Length: 313
Image (cartoon, rainbow, N blue to C red; front, side):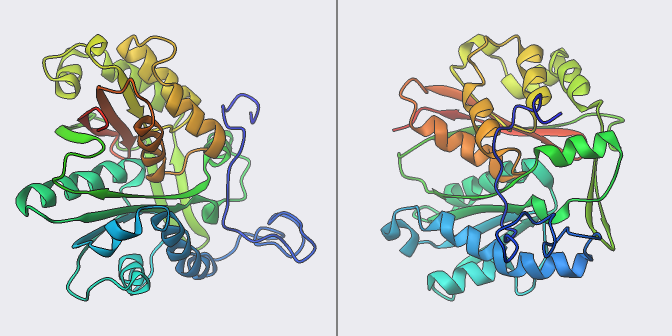
């Protein structure tokens, strides 16, 4: 299963054992029995802000210092004061910075975070919105022999990403947004909070439902508006798994290279939930041929959310 997943490497915040072993070996978090949710959340409370700050520090320090709004997306943990408050304090942001925390939306939370930042930048000229996504998926591995559950856990890794959204003509220009909820699909992707973490339920029907939906005229119109797939030279698709990317490629009849950036992110990092799409967008920022693109992600619902964007400046 690992060989066919399209994932070569994944990252985790979980520490190695004292003798350098894996977290599943003696002395590791998953050594003997499934850890309690409280134990997992204690790790989240320390590791999530630290990983988020590491991502933010890769941005231009001058831009971060002038931030007026902070939007944080994370669905793999809870802590109060929130990750947003911890980030603001550690960065030394003004106490008046406006904060928004987007939680438990799953893989399309990055779209919600960027969309929120887009509306802030449009409504308040001169604002600078720091968008952060941080996900610690490896905190929620489960002991199971269920094949679908194993396939889901096989793909997930940890990651964080950060971006600045303003009304200045730099980077990508976000344009039209869209959202489509697929009927009778609410059982296909589920997260259940239990005594031993957040249990992911990812149905094997998801790729097929995605491919079928993208072929429907009504869904295509909501995503592409009046355009056709050939009019877009860039596709930032959430790398939810090899079969999900195959479904998007098949549903839109895209050429073989169209999802190269998404497949590369999947290979190098796995599915990092909401952070994955941010990694794909970052990859496209360095691509000189990017003029007009579609960003989209899938998540609980089953729903697709996204936006149209225009070339890097």
